[in-house]
Length: 405
Image (cartoon, rainbow, N blue to C red; front, side, top):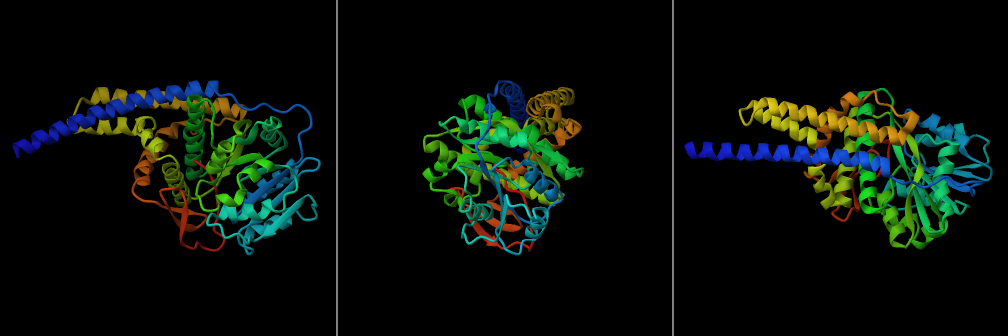
């Protein structure tokens, strides 16, 4: 019994020391986020008239902000632009809403159903829309994005450089008012997007695309085999950027930050966040594991304080450590969000950032406990190579959101 107590005490002591070290490495990462946010170089706006574009928007079910987003898409279209909207299922209720919003608008084509057999439902819809696109510039936009003329111009502008094959937009979450929407907005604005900026800084650029809005030239899509080649992967946007880069083209972060409107329930939000985590794990398993030393400082400091309360270490230094990491974390998140969102930055949720980080750490653990994800109301298994395998069909009218890591 005595030996067991000694071993347990020594193990807890080592664990407490490890938690302190991980807290400090996370604080260094948060400082790096500030540097990356200030240093990121994004594509510039094109001076003059941009080329005409085919804007492709896949729908799946109706969500609270859909009508306003559809109306914004219509207002965004410039001379000669076209808007292609579609669903995987012909009976999707979003079709009726789209027909009502775009009645008599000859610039808009609505496609009810897709003949594609892609496992990825978003890609299945885009395959049908891609066949009907008539312009050289193809813009892929999620239905929860609130697009406008300036955002579309800024997204397309980098393609003026023939070396650039794809322009991808950073995005910011706009909460609807529910706790879940505020939690997800913090996840996007102060965790995911800053991590993209750090990757951009350390790698001198990016070779992947993000999930909200992307612009690509038709010749580039042809060179990589078209959108249909993405039909069996979960992280279709990520893989799209990878293949564009592998084809010898440049992937550029556009000069705009598009807003996405968040209005899911707490269960839907947690399921989607878990899907993002498992997507990241599938795409970059080593990189995702490495986030243990960069993204979980708040959880590590909280655990260190818990051990101190049990007699492993001193409570006062542990409490100071937790306060310190929270201060650095909130400061880095604030700087990153203000740099990206500018006058549209919303910092009212900043006090909830610690809660978001604790939830994020719990989902980090959950991401390693299985490969199942829920997407658009259906259950899938993600294979080690990132491909999707359907488990069970979802309910009729199930929504929503396709995103990349």
